[in-house]
Image 1: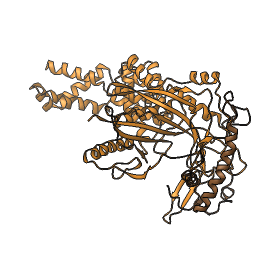
Image 2: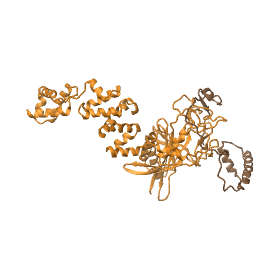
Image 3: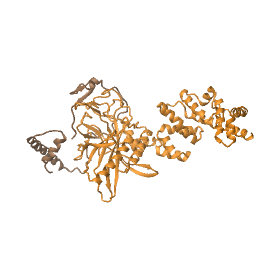
Image 4: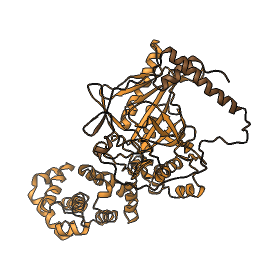
Length: 476
Length: 97
């Protein structure tokens, strides 16, 4: 038996435009229910949709980033179904003529390269939200209805939950880099629906295809796919009957459960949307969009590894978000050592941002100012330890490192006559430590260093103190 | 062209969420078949050199710029709703087939 998992991913992404797809209502999260609606998105008689050019541009932008072809000509289609999340009784979507198609994506998992085929990235409109009442009726809020929604579909080329996790993490980074969406899964801006089954490539035998819904984080996609693969294996072994169905992920109990079985293929009676004319993206427009694409995360990561000799992991953390990557390069360009810059960025800077729930764009410390701080450490003006406090002060006040150091009197003491006096004092006041050190206990030196640091509020140059103490003790 | 079968009539009725009694189904089937006959006549035309038409007007690339304007007041949004609750539309339970 040579069964292996085959997983495909369908990802929906709300585009970050100012207005909706076919009308001028605001595209906004969290507004009062039904306060962002008009005759067009309510599907009132006589209203006509007009496509948002920016949304079309954003799908082309995404398609190009995923190596897709852009259709020379394509149309919108009506997807007809009965459900009150769309007041028109149909969704404007794309069917046999997607705006972009035939792309691919290089996945890197455990040092191995793998090519994932992108079937299509097309444009449609989002649906409203239902709130189901205990009495069986539902309340409907149409604010989300008509928000531009991009659908990105892969071929079933993934073979593990880990590959899905890496793809979604990378896709999210790309969408943010090219600035088409916030791609936030927790807010439902990005939604992923995996299809999972096991296929025996020798015989062509396969378990029924299952689609999983209700996944609101990359982690739940990972867990749900993992669970579903194991369930298919179990059913294969036990001979339990399986169905082609949609299953819901139950986060609390970490399992999937049947939502609905598909006895026949869905029939959405697609037909070309008569209210919208075909899209024929001009060649110059496409080239303009292509030229405006920023360096994508994978290329940037590789460049950081090669140019600055960063470890793979560090490069990954720094490039997860474009602003952070730009910030990093600016610190280095301002003269900081690449290694020290990455350590500081991933340590103190990110720690501070997390603690304060800030984005790097909100940080009051400019990259050049951070480089100046690193230079002060490099030149032994302040110790690395004091620099941590200086950084927090800089972040709180927006002052430069020099200003903070001066204002707080934090300069490192490297003056040998002053340190010499302190060394003598430390030796005089710690006879026990001196004795221990002389009898070979290296660690006893710490007590004397500690005394000097205490006397100088941590400002004594630690290397110099160490060296001078050893010299002095050696002469005794 | 083959005639539309009673099963196909039932399928179309299901898609349109129409519950038709048997005699209605038979009548609708006869009417659909009469419509199909018109198309059979049209099929006789040679259209090899004619591109498939989805729009009667030869236009393309009609866009608007991405700018917003105020939406309707919520009272107007729900004014025509058969049923509502505060600022929401209220709908009966929808059973997914």
